[in-house]
Figure 1 (cartoon, rainbow, N blue to C red):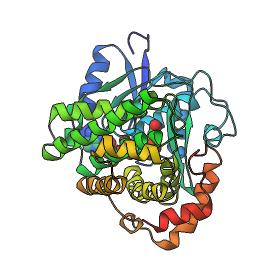
Figure 2 (cartoon, rainbow, N blue to C red):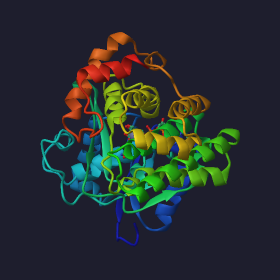
Figure 3 (cartoon, protein in one colour):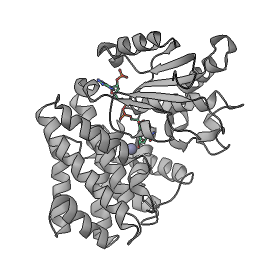
Length: 362
Ligand code: NZQ
Ligand code: ZN
């Protein structure tokens, strides 16, 4: 920030873990030592809200506050909110219109920086921001014009994470990789190999982190793999799929209590069996089974995938998220409405009937 000539920054934070871990003291000390003034903006919640982004935009737009950049200190929810604020500050009307594809993103948002406290989303390395509006039953991602200019990742900061969040992070990154991997057949071999290696690396690190939450090497490797998982590298030349994310975002849109990684775990368990049974992406399933799970038998690999999620203590069924069969039509409706705003899967364009079947099988 100092090198960029920033004189005053808006620090965007969550519900208090940053203070509890002592990180906030370290950051404010460093800002003071470098002569950078700051304002504090606390209270971003998981499944972050567009209303919070609007509050932050108002702070940045007030000339009296002299905000020149945004510093996110937290996980994906904080970073995504900071991105919304940085773009909203340079946008003449409501930034939610950009999420809803009613307007193009501003070309020159405020610069933003991140200090990552939870490896999960890859938001620290990309230009995506996912935001919720519960009143409208929406949870939708958008790509802004900028990525964070710099990101600090100190694995020791993550020693304090509760297991639920570690699990959610591993499921999220694995889902990013699998949804990029299961694309049209015979797309770039190099990207596929990078992708498969990252999946294996996450599995290895998670065994060590489960045994010892403070294993520095495992945490460092995990953070690196998770950040790369959604920085664009493993999807170069790949068409991608994203149906698991589309369905999960609809679940979180109707029920903000569901953590992103929990919803993904439930949908993934059903979705990949569903694809395989229909003979979709056959060659890719065979390559994945052998590379990630060491077997040529895809059914066995899918069983091992389930067991992997069990070993991470990931939820299994909609019921584990506190939802029932009666919620399925609502999830399907929201998924269909939101899916229209993005790129549809080349493998399996979701219809209401298909999404219903995938959810019923959870
Ligand atoms: O709010 P605080 O008190 O900071 O506590 C947080 C929060 O309750 C806690 N936490 C974070 N770091 C901690 C810690 N607790 C102890 N020690 C630490 N070091 O963790 C809880 C969850 O935080 P959150 O930021 O919500 O989790 P995550 O990083 O998994 O982010 C999930 C959000 O990112 C979106 C998801 O949809 C979801 O809204 N995604 C963003 C993407 C992107 N921008 O590229 C892509 C993803 O697919 C995803 O959709
Ligand atoms: Zn995700």
